[in-house]
Amino acid sequence: MFFRRKGKLRRETDQKLWNSLNELKDEWMRNKVLVEKSIDPSVHLLNELKISEAKYFYLVREAKVRHLSADRK
Image (cartoon, rainbow, N blue to C red; front, side):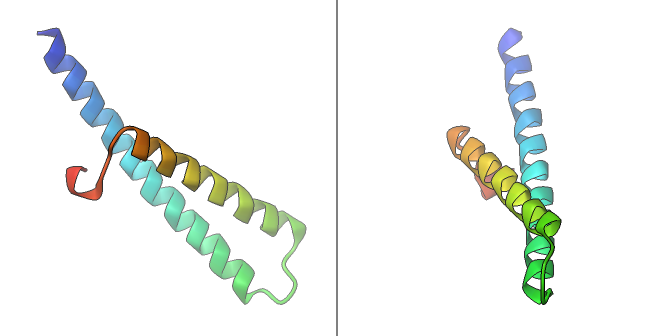
């Protein structure tokens, strides 16, 4: 009885992690393209790029720890 709930919570958490990972990847890529197309990017923009990159790679490491893969979304 309790183990089914644990599995359900794990699946829900994995799904949230997967969604967050995709959203952060999109944000990181948008910031990266913006910096690449910019002639003289501002310090704020560069900081936003570094922050979004750090968040994305943190979630990638978390997904590896949880053994999350694209086929098991």
